[in-house]
Length: 271
Ligand SMILES: [Zn+2]
Ligand SMILES: [Zn+2]
Image 1 (tube, protein in one colour):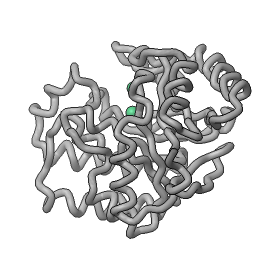
Image 2 (cartoon, helix red, strand yellow):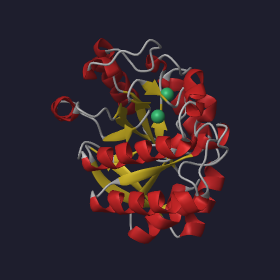
Image 3 (cartoon, rainbow, N blue to C red):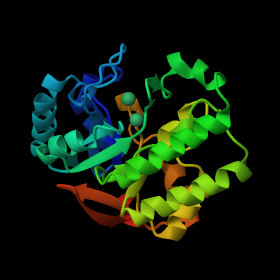
């Protein structure tokens, strides 16, 4: 099994050293892990009041630390990644920055719509301040824009807008799901089954089953991540996640080295 979405305390809302995440992965019998801490928003000209990413000056140290951890580890492959915010208007800057970074993979995620951090519990009240249809429509437009940017390898917590349990009926969601699967496919992207949604008010993986089915049908590759912000969250709900992926039809998971994608069989990815 693999876990391709691990954070570190550098983002200021995660606990535990990278060594402790690695130890947790060993205990769970994982064969490959990927650190994907929050890329410095400061490099993109954004410094939200509550710090939610590493600082620009911390990026080189993060890279060194994860590489050193991997170099000292014989059994578990340790990949170096980042979770990068998609902020419209920063595409060129970000492309330049990422071209100079030695990442194995880059997860593109949405946490912000304008100045609203819609994934942050402190700002969850803003879901009540405009029609939900409007919020969803804005979210998916932004998501498809992120997919088309060519900046990312993996799209993170793809239906993260449901995090706090604000949902539209399935009939209203179907066109969004269909278009999302199509856009992923059209842009040669991978997405993650992110198990952290189970611990959010949404109480469901990102994405939910219907979008997973449509992605499988479109031939969109999937990878697996816990979005761990503490060592005890490494590999959370993975038995259930793998069972769901198998039910939907998936038999392999995407892995990355130097931003090139390959696949491992899900059978082999178990213990
Ligand atoms: Zn985080
Ligand atoms: Zn995220």
